[in-house]
Image (cartoon, rainbow, N blue to C red; front, side, top):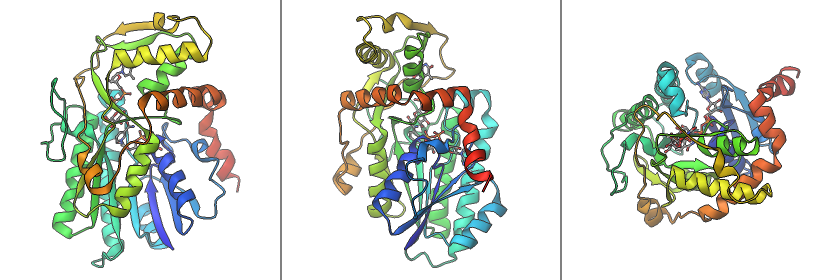
Length: 350
Ligand code: NAD
Ligand code: DAU
């Protein structure tokens, strides 16, 4: 039996990782630690919340006493750290929250692991989940490699870059067995509708304008969230300590091309005549410091660990659209804020 702490498991990517680990590894005890910020939603995990190898721990990674308590009580063998403030636009309006959770919270977790594990790191692992945004903004050519110098440009990416450096510092300074991965933009089910794809699906469904920043020419490299979760599983089990692995879909889209594709799929799924949804496109003021292009070179994880994405973007996007259209209740509860009562009803009464 291994005790694994997954932080941020009630969020978008974290919930997919928790689900994968709970179902695939019945001999692991999975502890999901989440503060349940606006982005944390336990309704993402209703299908596995009763599993015997799953427990939920409500808490804040910035709280060192809380972390010391749970490390003492559960003797975690490993940490998979996803908890973060994750939305670039929010980091522009409120940077401090990002510094607290993404930097201070990561150091508190590193300290808790180090205190709990002492000097015997046999069978231990601290896996830090990061982003391709730490590498900055690409021009028309080139890809982010693991050796690309860091050049973060938003408060969000700067806080993630800082946390990556600190995780590496704990490897070099204290010998903590760490591994890091940096992934490109994820899409899929259960994503909070503030990020481009779920926000636009919801707006199209409700005939609301689609606010495209600037000219819509910025480029992102999209990966299906379940493929990211599979890569995390592989790196957690087979990655080497002290190493970094880039994860990406080799799937670059300008925002405007992606939005038009989304409109096309939505017209089909909602039986609207061709071109109806595109009429909702509205160009708005650009994001401050908007990074022009992200694109990942994922050859290291392919060559060393054998990982490649399992489905095409067209398949993944259709599946994603269908999920949001079939889970209107989830979407309504998230957009109305009702999902925040779930914890109260489910756990506080016990
Ligand atoms: P998300 O915002 O959907 O979820 C974050 C989760 O962390 C939420 O459940 C939230 O409640 C929890 N959390 C926030 N602050 C906390 C705190 N102080 N203590 C405990 N829990 C806290 O984020 P996501 O999109 O699922 O991203 C997860 C991780 O993956 C982040 O570290 C992010 O930087 C990274 N990442 C995301 C993407 C992407 O495209 N979404 C791509 C690459 C890397
Ligand atoms: O690259 C990985 C990163 O991808 C993750 O680390 C972040 O956590 C995640 O949020 C995501 O960051 P982006 O800023 O790329 O994602 P977002 O969905 O916010 O925006 C995608 C693109 O769409 C970006 O160029 C901005 C644009 N956009 C976004 C929104 C929300 C719009 O044009 N209009 C919008 O309303």
